[in-house]
Amino acid sequence: MRKISIITLFCVIAAFALPLFSVEADAYSFEPEDVTIYSEAAYLENMETGEVIYSKKADEKRVPASLTKIMTCVLVLDQFKENLEDLTTTKVTATEAAFTELYDTGYSNAGIEAGDELTYYDLLCALMIPSACEAANILAIDVSGSIDDFVTLMNSKAKELGMTNTTYYNAHGLDLDGQESNITTCTDLAILCRYAINTYPVFTQITSMYSYTMSNDTTITTTNKLLDSSSEYYYGYVDGIKTGYLDSAGRCLASVAEKNGYQYLCITMGAEGYDDDGNAVYYNCADHKALYMWAYENLSYQTFVAENEEITSTEVAYADGDGYVNLKAQDEISAIWLNDVSIDELEKKITIYDNIVAPIYAGDTLGTIQFYYDGQLIVESNLVATTDVDKAVVKAKATVAANFFSSTQFRIAIIVISVIIIVYTCIFLIYVHSRSKKKVSAIKEKYKALEDDDDE
Image (cartoon, rainbow, N blue to C red; front, top):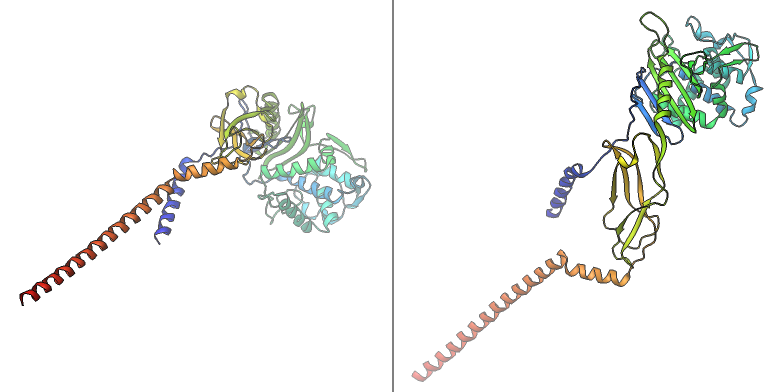
């Protein structure tokens, strides 16, 4: 019981002590200077590195409006992933069921009517360019047999992709009477867009179009002002993706831009749709253009530690040789970083693990290296051995022996043995002394008996 109490006390002390000595660092978040972001939630990611460049309430659940149609498009492309060329030849007839829930909603449309026959490619263009709600329902019914079954497919895909804060109730994004609104986040939408962009080149082809003429000779035009060269929001490096607007959602936008070899993905939600005078305003497009311009002007991909660059060395116990091994970063350390802040200005923290013992093999992880700026972690990597270090067997045995004779355990053993010897000696002396007394007493008694005999 005493041992258990001591161990328990140690664990309690350790539990309170660890937070005092551990260091936690938040990932570095860029704050664009002189850039006003009007949207209530925003997210900017570098597509090559996966780094989150800017985040504002990106995990807050919000109504996505017509950004819903990105998922609808993805599911249709999934159906044709083995034969994407069939999108332009497979035709669909619009049924009345696709329009039933849309009547009296003022829905955005591409002028498609019940009975029209269009290709899947036509319908995807109608879905993503002018944001046609009837195209969403026509596709949903043709793919799954009913809108409800398609919505089930939408939620399954969201779960598959890891969109943990997303729930769909329809394929187009409208707020319908008696139905809950679709819900998602900027972060979840980024997951979806990344999947669509990286999996289907046709997705970017469609969403980057300013206009398109369908097979029924109807020309449709984009709702994305970033693609409109006559708009003040035009940004020539943008390739789509999708706009959205509802009173409950504000203006939403997902877009991707590529310039100078860098590709960025931007998601915004919750921008005002109209000014005080009732005029339409496109702060969603303004936010995207401002973030892209800031990123391309101020950020670049930089190398913090070159590949195979030796960083430090550390002692290796029981090693054959000089007893040291050099360390390098596991891989080249590179990241998106500010052009006007030199890497030399960053705080570099090197941590070497305790009790490094031979043998060591090249590539073994022996520590970490971290770079900080303003107390925030920017990038980190494992530190690995550059060479093998063999174990010196004789040296190890000698060291173990030497360590034993100087160890606390050895001192305790000596004390215990000394105590045993002392106790044994004391007991022996007491025993001898007792025996001696008994012998003396016996002699005295015998001598006295002889004296008594003489007297008689």
